[in-house]
Length: 491
Image (cartoon, rainbow, N blue to C red):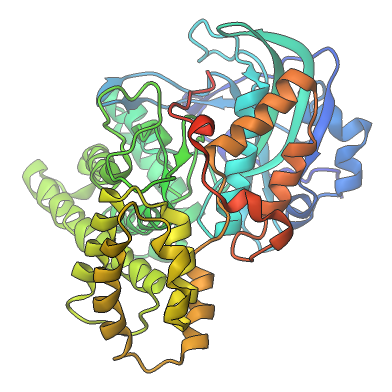
């Protein structure tokens, strides 16, 4: 077996789907972190990857046997405005491997130098955004949310120019694929219906093989992507995640969270929360994410119209019928998540209003999203434990009023108190990658070349549903002087 057993299906697609380009070598690569468990799941030897040969590949200084480096082409709506050509401007897909579960996975370098899609950019990445993506993507995986993964982070020994000189780094990202809504748009914009068809056939074979034999496979593809996105966004809301830049080029048709640029997690609950410095109008606020996901899916449907039926009107009717499923699918997944968070095992019509009343009270009282729900588990088992929840509210009586309704609802449930608490603790994490913790990790690495805080944060976030008393401080929200109000894109 070769060191990395590549099998590169996308590089066998027509040449207009990508540009063949090699990573640019760097002067002094150094391994910051290797995700050894992920390496093993990919069938790779972590000791070899951490050694000189593996490091050279992770830094872009060597092309592995079997690799077929490409930068993929895609377009995209960025903040609602169509950009006909984007593409991998600072990322190079090294190739694909079949993991130990039989799933095809991309291995991609981010920050590996310019490509034909770089649009005058340097194609490099600064250390801070690499660490942010590593931390958040691995935290999302531990939280049980579909996501791209971080295989490795490497410093380059070189500086990149942003607002100032910063240390450079490269992230090795693993994904089920890097095919986006914007990939379909790239071909549709050009009137390349055969390109759209070829891409759709590839996506069906790779991600949705169960629909290949259906009478309307392209309509079934649209429905499958809609279902995965509805479930994904519901899961985001359940942990307080804000993507920050939900452009169509950042929506994976595989249903994974992709591109952790100005992303962040809620501290105090407020559906209007925006962290991204480039989202000046709040388009991608926390509470807008379901609406934006549906908007993006409409853009996907537009690209598939020529494949859905012989006539345009008939095709549009099919697309509209499939798109109409998003709202009910999302609401069902979101409400199911809220029930789990509240310790409800059965379904009642009043559950949505009960959950909504809590969220409203949390907004009005600036209650921390993660810890309010985490402490509810103990409160559900014993009302004596209400104190830690009440302490999260500016006016604790707002919680008291809601808790009376909640306990009346819990009384109708068949489960015992301890069973409920265990279930709630599995639905409500104690630890999330809080913004101020990520910024502290980045500061230590960039300013002092100290990666110990990075390693410790990864350790904590690898078990988000466990109490971890030794790391209790990581569960706490920021003090006023620690709050991070803006997050930034890495480009």
